[in-house]
Amino acid sequence: MDKLIETKELYTNFYTYEGTVRALNGVSLSMKPGETYGLVGESGCGKSVSVRSMMRIVQSPGKIESGQINLFMSDKDHQKGIDILKRSETYMQSVRGNSISMIFQEASSSLNPVLKIGDQVGESFVFHRHEEMVKEAIDRLLEKSEKSSNGLANFFRNISVKLLQSELNSIEKYDLKVAEIDKELLEIEDNEDEASIARKHSLNFWRDRCQEYNFLIKIQRKIPILNAYQRGIGKAIRRNVLQLLTELGIPNPSNIIDRYPHELSGGMQQRIVIAIALACHPELLIADEPTSNLDVTIQAQILDMIKDLKKTKISSVLFITHDLGVIAEVCDRVSVMYAGDVCETATVKDLFKNPQHPYTKGLLNSVPKVEQGEKLATIPGVVPNLVTPPSGCRFHPRCPYAMEICKNEKPEIFELNDEHSTSCHLYSQKEDK
Ligand SMILES: Nc1ncnc2c1ncn2[C@@H]1O[C@H](COP(=O)(O)OP(=O)(O)OP(=O)(O)O)[C@@H](O)[C@H]1O
Ligand code: SF4
Ligand SMILES: [Mg+2]
Image (cartoon, rainbow, N blue to C red; front, side):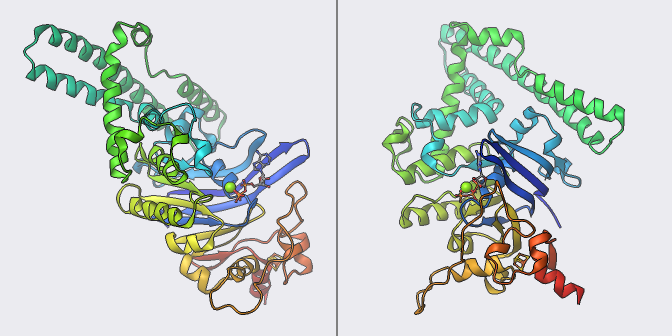
């Protein structure tokens, strides 16, 4: 199976005063390139912690304890995958925003209240498409010089072009250096002998210390008269921000970019958060409950926007929600999570038609139906406190089919077919017969 990203037996804990929260209990997921993959489950079941772990942004007091997160993003990584847990923080910075972007739960809290919208979207261009912006600024200046006959203006334009080119050279040298380090790391990734482990440490150390700008450029960026050349980069960023907002169908973008987040509606804030995530053309967009707290009309608009983007701008989407209706509308495949475990993975059609895990069945039965006359079914009990999670299958205290083995042993994953798997002892019992 072609893969884009996978987690294998991922364990993440939070070390709190109350005790250790065992948030992820060996999560294994696998996403294919080009698909919209859903992650669904009740509140507190570990959806956000799973994707935060996948981007290595679990906040303190959280820690990824063990497991693998393999990325198969660029062509060179496709066969083998890179275990990002073994890579340096700067490597992750190059992945976040470049290959993977994330829309966080709660749009309003992911926007900075004291920065204008244009600056917040522009920040993505500064961090992830800086080289492109510098090139665009150089081209514009050269174009203007060609058209203008004002000698003095052209003199200053030429100085700006020279300074921008020195910045571009420095970025290109940096890119070359980190590409060399990444290549060597990939070659020795699986070697576990002493010399290779030491080499991996030193390569990761040097990758973290590589500087994008040399000493001279740092100085030229700080001196007020000299750094005027950066206005060209600022203009290029503003043009690109406007173009992006227009492409996303945001009305009146030239007015929006000069506003602060509190001046926008919830739906508009969510669109801006999506624009920030898309600014760097990610291969994978992770959307963590992008429609929670929005009314149904706006929710439908945002879902339509993500579906359209899937056709035009981004190839793969990982969609997190607790709403099975949303899963049915946007996803190709889905994993159901409960208390830090993945219970079932299937195509959306299969999951709705032929659910296998008792928790999935319970979730589907608790969706209200229009023609339903009798009382709505619910899953008895609540999601457990993960400081003291139930032993064995974490769902056993709420499961109508629980057996003795369920209290003692964590069920393995059973492949029902190529596309459908579940983690439940009912299937091990069937296999044993
Ligand atoms: N910073 C933290 N400190 C301590 N525990 C945490 C922290 N963040 C998450 N957890 C715990 O990890 C578990 C999983 O939380 P997570 O946020 O992933 O749930 P979720 O499935 O995204 O829920 P929701 O649908 O409400 O967003 C919960 O038990 C939660 O209490
Ligand atoms: S393993 Fe046991 S408790 Fe868990 S879902 Fe299956 S039957 Fe229920
Ligand atoms: Mg969440």
